[in-house]
Length: 584
Ligand SMILES: *[C@@H]1O[C@H](CO)[C@@H](O)[C@H](O)[C@H]1NC(C)=O
Ligand SMILES: *[C@@H]1O[C@H](CO)[C@@H](O)[C@H](O)[C@H]1NC(C)=O
Ligand SMILES: *[C@@H]1O[C@H](CO)[C@@H](O)[C@H](O)[C@H]1NC(C)=O
Ligand SMILES: *[C@@H]1O[C@H](CO)[C@@H](O)[C@H](O)[C@H]1NC(C)=O
Ligand SMILES: *[C@@H]1O[C@H](CO)[C@@H](O)[C@H](O)[C@H]1NC(C)=O
Image (cartoon, rainbow, N blue to C red; front, side, top):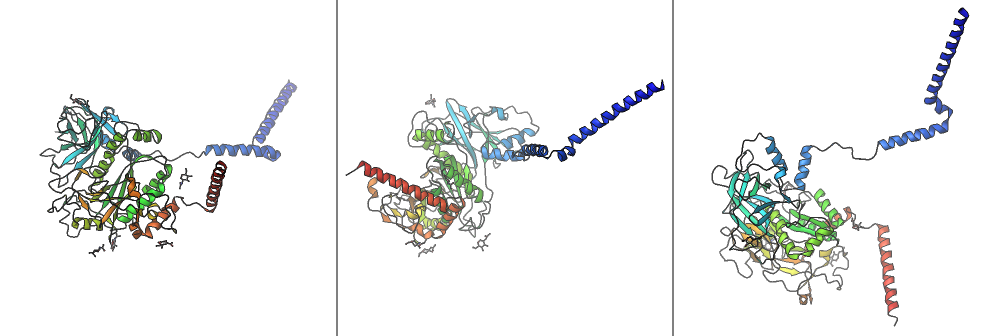
């Protein structure tokens, strides 16, 4: 009996011992014991462990999700006219019952080609791009809100527009304030063609009474008084004093104009005049004009321009880099705004949109009125004069004046070339300067042998002899107190009681230098040298060089050698082909 027990114990003991040994071995194998035994195996293992670590640390964006505030700021840049922030604020408030003109929400909005919204009345379609509050002293209808639209109705004084209404959304009010549209200002009096949309300012006055001097936060255009609107636009009213630019960015004058749209005369000490420049949609997808853009922007800066507003269409990637660099490093000086065509051709950049712009010149020109007027109304409270230019145009003060503030001073005193405005005028809506062409003259030798051809305007100082006539291709500086609707060469509308029409300033004071080929080729003969631009030297060249350097436009030694070698081989090839083809 006892021996059976003893045997059973022995067997149990052996089993337990074996299990223990097995566990110890298992433990040993799975830990560092193994690494001591088999060095080679260990290496490959830790390698795979490192691989795991690497894959755990993929270089993906691990930043926090953006806040709602940040997202709303981005959306505001993407869609400047659509007041999403304001709409959400309104929706958070407990709303009273509104029988007439219930507020639209996102699902009611009839968006069109990203930046536009639609309204319909009878057989007219309205594409609305922007809305602007106008309370300028010289405007008799003020205060009013202007809607910048494209409508399928050309300028026709006998045409009666269907009745439409503005629903004004005030900040703390559930119900809209509703007024009739009282004004249609078509900005194209010249001619028309079927299927086009015409740039038109629609005007809605603030009503007499309690809301007269309140600035509406948003506005909708409706066909019937009490409709639920299908569109909702932020009312632009930007009067904040312009941010102080860093000293290097603001050359002439350094004070920022505290915005007083009215009462400039009463100021005892006049603040320096402020200038903004508006440029239409930048449509340069294939030709690299980046270097020309730098030179032009730096010249604008030297002339006393405080801000240049560009509208985005499609630019060569190098131009986009240049614009981004300015937007980032000269904040306040260059602004790039989104844009698409009003009729609806999609902004599919770069190729289709460029094609659509090119394919119908008339449609394109009608659309150009939109950026000019959007830019003007966004900036009219912050700047004294606004000009509309292409990047090959420069109003050049002459004589002993080199800046636009000095030029305005003399333009007020100068006679009107052609005497078309009465001698009694005290104010003019615009000062205009006569156009003169500075052609390329590719076959003529450089005027400055010691200056690189990478300075286009500094190098191209030969111009045609004759200036164009008073109105032909002229460009102007528009007084922001008086201009109402802009074309690229003049104003369509201005405040006629408060100011005279435009004055053409004689060429002894300034000229509009146009860096392109004249339409009349006979003008090309017998050019003269007019190097007024050299008065900005050597600072202008230094400013341009600094940008070229920073953006990497200047080749290094190796790139230079390669370029020269490539050019030499190309020349040789051309020479050989020429010789081969013409053996005599
Ligand atoms: C709208 O109707 C009027 C009157 O019938 C007509 O004269 C006009 O051409 C129409 N406009 C459009 C865009 O169809
Ligand atoms: C503005 O210019 C004046 C005179 O040129 C100078 O005394 C003043 O310090 C400048 N102010 C600023 C803010 O740069
Ligand atoms: C330019 O010259 C005129 C006349 O000699 C003088 O009255 C004026 O002050 C000068 N302007 C500048 C900016 O030097
Ligand atoms: C180049 O020539 C112009 C005009 O002859 C002169 O004013 C300028 O100082 C010269 N520049 C250099 C760097 O030599
Ligand atoms: C301009 O574009 C060309 C062609 O893409 C490119 O090789 C060059 O580096 C660009 N220049 C700059 C300064 O980015």
